[in-house]
Length: 440
Image (cartoon, rainbow, N blue to C red):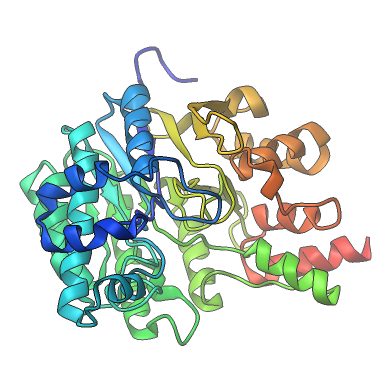
């Protein structure tokens, strides 16, 4: 049990995918103006409605999300943002709407977009430390994440560092790691406080999108950071953009076409397995892991026969954008300040299906599932409920898409695939469980 007075909160939001091209009539003015003028230009748009499902976040959605977060979590000292600031097709939209096909041109516009994003977040949370990961769309070159040498990393490092980190040593650690390859470790509360290890797991994408040599270097760095934390009796939050484990939507799509249930992951299988092994090897050191990318409110329960008794919970953040058919959402977590274990989370959402969409509380985790987030047994109990209790499964399906049930892709036929993806996070364990499911 948590002792009285030892609970605190932090804010988690992700995948804004801010679209500065949403009103094409403003793009030339934005391109010709410094970031400091962008708010005035964007607020003059006649396109004041929220964007439809399948779109990135426009100015109206971004501002309303920030205002809602400031109203519900304005006093938090920490925000976790697991990536994807930029809109999809950024480079192509810039060239099409400005006529400028130069790399220097798109880099400058991209830099101002990040500056605007950062400034708007900081204006609502001036005293918060913001832990940011590199998203797969956050790149000056393509939409598979920043590789070492990507100019996005070098021109965004000083912007993010100065606004989102309050301590000089954290600013230096962030700038050095982010500029080089998009990953870093910081300790906002000092060497005896919680440590954040922030990964660029875009480097672990399957070939040809990932970079195996850079990915291996990052994996070695991750292992050494965990070892140092364990030696120092330090707790860790791991933050990355792309979840480990099966891509349930891809598996379900293949099943619908072929009748075969076979593992397809987001990450390269070897990197995925190594990532899962490190999470379990250091399960007593890692207090929580956070991903994004899918735009869904989801989780992964990491276990393995190779690590009996060890378990790790990875939470997946909903997106602000409705690009993948979800409603926009964000989460406020409570945690135990004595050991940094998660206690509960509350999700807030914007129901775009409503005739008058408004931000409001969607659900409380502990109330919905009857368990806290504090222990492996709690996590296992929630997973067991989703497997066996129809009410728990119904809640999971509703919450996963942040209440956008008209866009729900989970059916009675493919629900077992989504259930498997929650707890079988390597190709071998997933395929073995799938074979047992089908044979049963």
